[in-house]
Length: 237
Ligand SMILES: [Fe+2]
Image 1 (cartoon, rainbow, N blue to C red):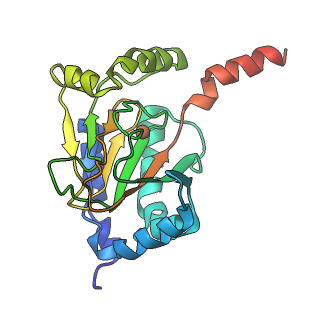
Image 2 (cartoon, rainbow, N blue to C red; image 1 turned 60 degrees about the horizontal axis):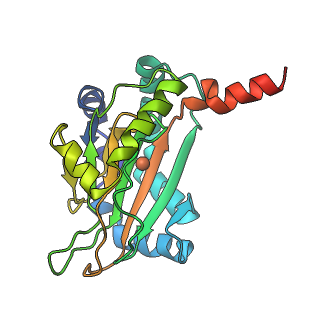
């Protein structure tokens, strides 16, 4: 393997400019990082769960590709300079998500994240054998304006609940630009988590295998002025 993590991130500055201007950006493919092995190791750790927060093979993978070395510090600077984030660099949430063919729950659950930045890292992506779907990500960049308060965040989330179904997504796609990514290029997607409405199609039962992604969430601004924080402040008077 003559591909280093340094090389992987060598054009990250220009990619981050795209992230800010368009609300999303793709990263180079991960094929050189032994994804088959990573998938096996994470799967082992997950057991029968759909979600698992940062298990050790997941952590090792992020280290191997150099996320904390080459990406996180730059995202942190962006968060502070462009999005007024004043929390800690350790404010992150990493979770692996595994969906088995035929799972009828993990689809069309359209939502915004509370974190500023979300990265989807494809680890194992199945192919449907008939005309099914393989859990493709559907996303709407800039589906809403950046929420400047917890109240506007809450109202925006509530309003968009109406799109959390297949029919809702179809309705929204006639008004806003929709992108579908099957991740068969094994290129991660980085997007502004709290302004990009996103969801997945079903992993249908004709798929060749489970679908595994590592999801990285960076910097949740809500604790500072969140509804939880306000309630705590009132109680402590
Ligand atoms: Fe999400």
